[in-house]
Length: 203
Image 1: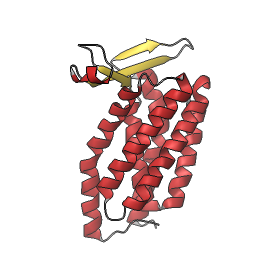
Image 2: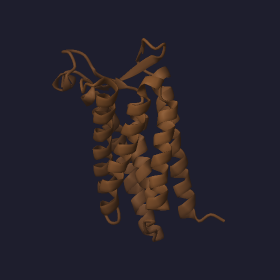
Image 3: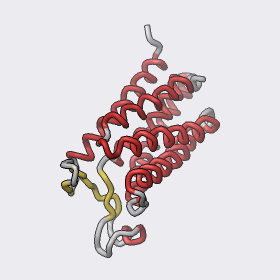
Image 4: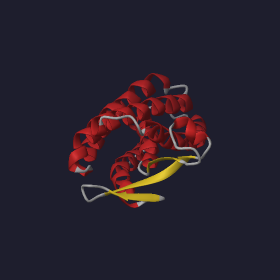
């Protein structure tokens, strides 16, 4: 019978893995603005920052800062990767990253296969490297710091490899950051529960 800790870890793993197809579906189907692409697909965008603040990050005066709708799920993926490492350990977390990178490449449009796979792999590894030394006693800080590093790496690499440009960097970073910030109260509650139950991070 599965222990409660392992069962939680497997749940986090399932949710983390589901983020990859969910992101690919969202970016093609859900948004406040969906634009047809030359390859026959669709790019759906969502607003991530209102005017006039959006102008500070490159939006035109009076317009919202926009980002692909997948940023919501991608931001959540960094948080879930941290949680699955906490409950299952470093080796399963590394395996989950490799699985996610493979799925990301398989589900991406042909012209974005390399950008999608490489960005996912390196960004999640960056998340792991920052999270691992911080997580034992500072879970909320570890999740926040590692997720921010990971999402910046993901945004820079994806945009550079896919388009050779960082024109849409701020929309990507801010959109992903909202999900990380929204998750932090939940992470705090998880940490309080761990303390009550005497759970230690898996190795």
